[in-house]
Length: 138
Image 1 (cartoon, one colour):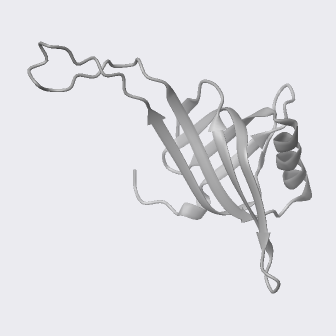
Image 2 (cartoon, rainbow, N blue to C red):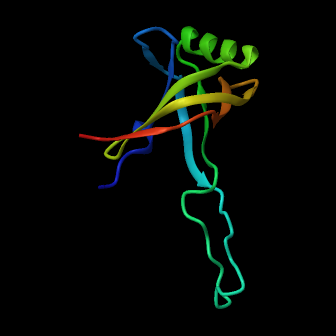
């Protein structure tokens, strides 16, 4: 994968319809996508002093953090409504040149901020709430 512009990473929220339509979540200035897997230690007396891990046994998760400005009232309303309802919504996370992660997420954190002489900003954190799939970029 060659170098890509960070601004081209996208976070999209689904509308819950069938078929589901996805909209870009505001003008995100920073985005982080973290994939994690918990380790399951399978070390025993015959491990020769080295730790052994049990493959494919731990819990996997995907977390997303982003901050920016809302450019669209509909996107702001969708995010706020999903947060207050405690809804699990489908999101798509697009990484240019690499592909797209998609699946169910809970909005775990939603912050609003602003300086008196600047624009209102927001920050959100998403926590995966089920299996996340990945589709490579064509």
